[in-house]
Image 1 (cartoon, one colour):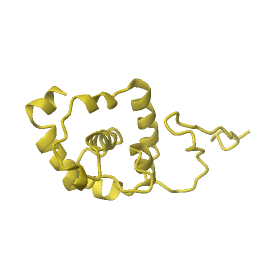
Image 2: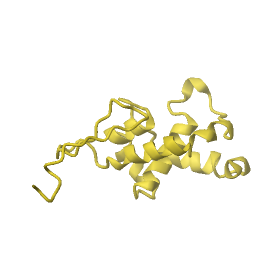
Image 3: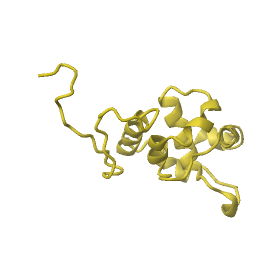
Length: 131
C-alpha cells in the first residue's frame, strides 16, 4: 500500500459539468485545478449567480464577449485561487481549468483590462457595491 495516494483510483466529477474528470494522474494541463472546485462550491451554495438580477449591463450586446456574471466569476475565482491582482488575468484567461469553470469551454476568459473596467465602472459604483 502506498502512503502517497497513488494506489487510489477515485475520480472527482463536479456537479456543474459531469463530463469533467479530476483524477490527479500527473499530467499538467492547467496551472490550477482549484478553479473547478471553487466553481463547484459557487454552484452548490449559489454565491455568484444571484448577481444576474442585481447588476445592470449597459454594454452593447453585439460588442460583448463576456457576461458580467462570467467576469465577476472570473475575478472572484482568481482571488480565491490566490491571484489577488488583475495582472494575472491575461495569463489565466487561457487556462483550461479556468475556462471550464467560467463556462467558456474553448474561448478565453476576460483580459486584465476588461476585469479592471469591471471593477472600476460596474462594481465600483453605488449599484455595484449594493449588489
